[in-house]
Image (cartoon, rainbow, N blue to C red; front, top):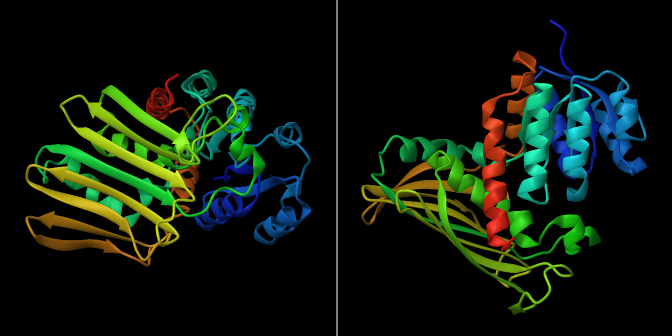
Length: 328
């Protein structure tokens, strides 16, 4: 069988890493590369020397591709995804799919009309730890999961100016980091209804005064789900946490608990444990090359079938929660 031909739109570090993971599956091939940086293009060509280098998404789509992998700035995600889908291409997009639930919905509707596969790079789902924790939650091994604590503190801030322009980014640390946390909680529980959302956003240590001109660098939010589960979320940029990052997803049930936590401030190394009273049991631990698994999964699914799948509808559920956190 002919392998699906992919175009890679944006081949900075993340785009290139996802490209490498997809090609490593052997299920797809790289047919085109596009990036405004000649240096990034040169690095990507080391992975796919035969791929055509093009200067736009339009030129990429003119090659008759089967799929497009999008790793461009957030403001472009929705429009580029829709353009690719309307050209008959499946899409794998970096988060967020859109700057709002309305943008995410427009992409999902375009994927449904085109009958093409759509996925977003929610990579934390594919950590070895969450692959162990999620069945415990869904199968009832932890009893009724009534509380979830989610944390993502990044001691650094993004280095690109567009992250700090709400018109381009859609928001600050919630859109950048919290999106992963919200997805992780809802996905693990099977996307229950979110009945209540309260939040507090701040910038520079003060309440966010003008959300149309500034973005938050610290946020806390509480979600109340159908069935009474309470989800507490905290995320930040540049918080003095004493280490590079604090990342934690803890699930507390009536019959036990389980948690995914980063090791020694790492952005990449995690330990997952199950708790029973005061005892703990190891579920998974670093090393774990999880970063590209979401992309590899999409590539393998595309090789089996390019058609739309209903799990794409989940993507708007998380976007709707982010809208509510932002009060819009």
